[in-house]
Amino acid sequence: MSSHTLTVGFDLDMTLIDSRPGIKAAYEALAAETGVYVDTDLVVSRLGPPLEEEMAHWFPADAIAEASDRYRAIYPETAITPTTALPGARESVAAVQALGGRAMVVTAKYEPNAKLHLAHLGIEADVLIGGLWAEGKAEALLEHGARIYVGDHTGDVRGAHAANALSVGVTTGPCDEEELRASGAEVILPDLTAFPAWLRTFAAG
Image (cartoon, rainbow, N blue to C red; front, side, top):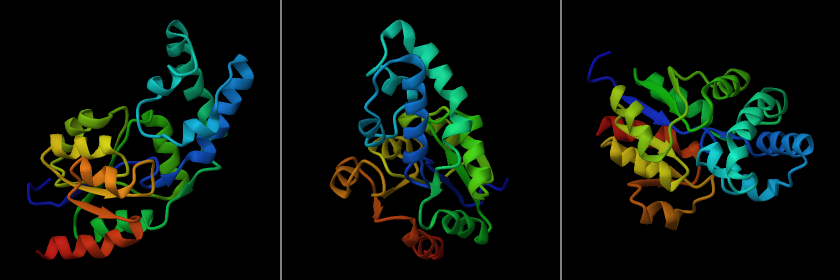
């Protein structure tokens, strides 16, 4: 890959996809199976951090790993079909590629399940890397030379900055414009429908 190739990273949950219905269904199935109460509406209001952090709110410490593994196993049957692409998601990935660039998805989600989402929704990213959160996302962004990282969470802003990438925030997730701006996002868009035009202007600059 040429060092001059434009590489843009995207977060997955609530940036490219609205996974709230699917995640809610997966947690409901897990709660029914284990008998452990989970406030699924609260869960889907704060998506972003790794699964184990959310599980810690509902399961004792010695049960988190097992519950997380079971959730990941339940996920393909319960969470893929209800999940939708957010407006502008496919067009934003395509906009990067139309400029001769590479679009990568870097997410905290378990990579095999993230791959199922992209395939089901026809989002054709060039690279997918899962299991990375906040500053940890810089590992993948630096490896692939990403100049821009797009996300909906303040953790995504931190990841972009740790990789010396431009942070583009979208307000489709749990963090509003004020939170994203306070965390240092250089660009804030209401959603991805505005991204292709912004990207073309950026690339021409």
